[in-house]
Image 1 (tube, rainbow, N blue to C red):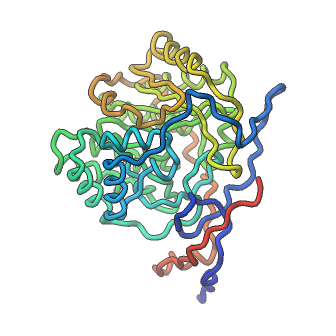
Image 2 (spheres, rainbow, N blue to C red; image 1 turned 30 degrees about the vertical axis):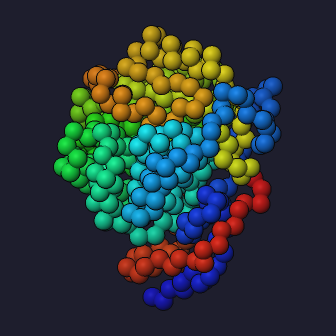
Image 3 (cartoon, rainbow, N blue to C red; image 1 turned 90 degrees about the vertical axis):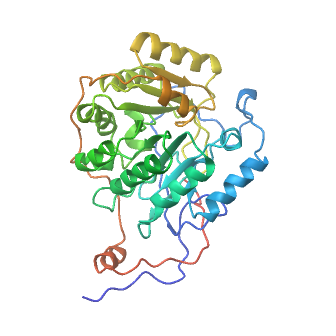
Amino acid sequence: MSVEAPQQGARPAGYAPQGKDNGVVKSKGTVNVPLLEGQQPLEHRARKPEWLKVRAPGSPNYLRLKQLMRDQGLHTVCEEAHCPNIGECWESGTATFMILGDVCTRACKYCAVAHGLPTELDQDEPRRVADSVVTMGLEHAVVTSVNRDELKNGGAEIYAEVIRQIHARQPGCTVEVLVPDFKGNETALRIVVEAGPEILAHNIDTVERLSKHLRPGGRYWRSISMLGAVKRMNPRQLTKSAIILGMGETEEEIFRSMRDLRDASVDVLTLGQYLRPSQHHVPLDRWVTPDEFRHWKEVGERELGFGHVESGPLVRSSYHAKEQARTIEAQGPGTITEILEADVDSAVVIDAAEAALRALGAPPVRPAPALVQLGSL
């Protein structure tokens, strides 16, 4: 069978972090979020309130870590997702490694990570991540990834090897993994659980009503139940999730999502403010006040029984993660322990020529490094 390869030098049409060549990037697509009566999105360049302002990073330690990541050929979600805490965390010597490349097979409408067709799977990545953990002298390492829906187990084996190598080469270092949903593949999830991370996290990111619009490749109940299934596999496993506020959710929906996570016996929850990466992403609904974040922390810990709720405007999933790994005790299984919606397709689409090349074992063709931003939503 003859295969017509993708045209050499073609300009990819899509979104990617500014200044980076992420390979074949695709459009994030349209964003059709069902707004409720009275809701009006903020302008993209709306002035941030004082509580969201942070100083620009640039300390010697920040620059050292940035150079280390480039020398090792590693990616960090701190950079890819435009995390506002990058200065604080990097200056204190902590960072969140992003494995399995820097191009995601899904197109979540709020995410700054590039969407498209990943290239090869880097089997040497676990060694380099562990090298960096040793070089940095970390006491707690956080590892996340893009989605790799084209892989049988979604890259679970790479996660497991990263965990094992860090534990072996940096004794005493706790490991937190923030995993994708693996399309509900229980075998993939078990591979990671059995590698023994101190914290296993998976973020639902938004409420049920908005999930199908903002996370078209994911499923709300798949994510909730996957966390519940972890506790069936290992009742002593500390689990964690996150919700991003400011994308059109209501108070009732926030509470319901928090309750759903507790039904899955999630131990730690983080709540933070959505910051729109660009005009090509879902509009911002509102600035959530520090008082509201304090309210949700109290509700989560006192009313719903989370072991810990990290809640604040600048909070992100790995914020203060080391303290959580050392102070929170895991609770046993909840009422949700079986993975739901595992049979629902993730909606990942791979170009026919690209799929044929992969089937033949041919290396994917990388286009010219130019990136084209979306023209409009």
